[in-house]
Amino acid sequence: MSREQDQAFIKTFVGVIIFLVVLTIFLIVVASMTVGDEDQDYAELIEERTAQRLEPVGQVRVSGEPMPEIAQAAPQEPAEPRSGQEVTQAVCAACHANDFQNAPQIGDEQAWAERADKGLATLVDHSVNGFGNMPAQSGSASEDEIRKAVIHMAEESGVQLGE
Ligand code: HEC
Image (cartoon, rainbow, N blue to C red):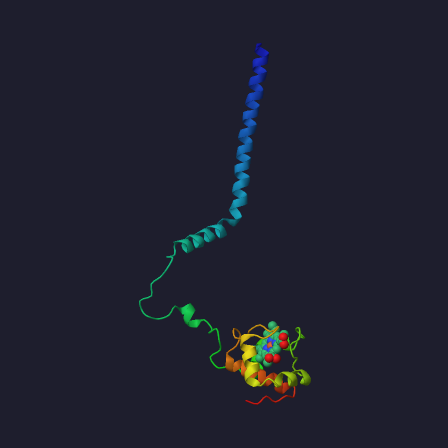
């Protein structure tokens, strides 16, 4: 290789090195500017997450009191039995006021009169355990509530169901 070629190579080489150094500094400056804005939030987030992860997995309660979350949680079932009307609205109306398959509709006197012939006990039993196209209702209401709902729906349809 000639001297000129050597010099040309060194020039290019030094040029490239200088370019890379400048580029590196530029990127460092840009990167620190971008991160800088969120630094505070990010640091807080990291602190919060770290604290969460360091929390003990379980806690032993020795005082005998229930955990506040459990003590305050709303009971699943209302303590008082619901009225026939309440159960009808909450559970039965979905089908008995919405033309679901062949469900006797509230207000349809003829449909309820036909069913009433079976007697209240049978109708309640069918509602609790399921009958034909109606799934068992025992998961949604107590037997007592279901009995009141049957009487309520029949009454609303002008049919009296005796005990
Ligand atoms: C998922 C829909 C659905 C729900 C919810 C539902 N029913 Fe029904 N019910 C039906 C259908 C459908 C029939 C007709 C069943 C048949 O004859 O095949 C029926 C029939 C009945 C009958 C007549 C049973 C018989 O022996 O002829 C009674 C009584 C009754 N339902 C009461 C209730 C009560 C009370 C509730 C609420 C606690 C309720 N149903 C909720 C769909 C429903």
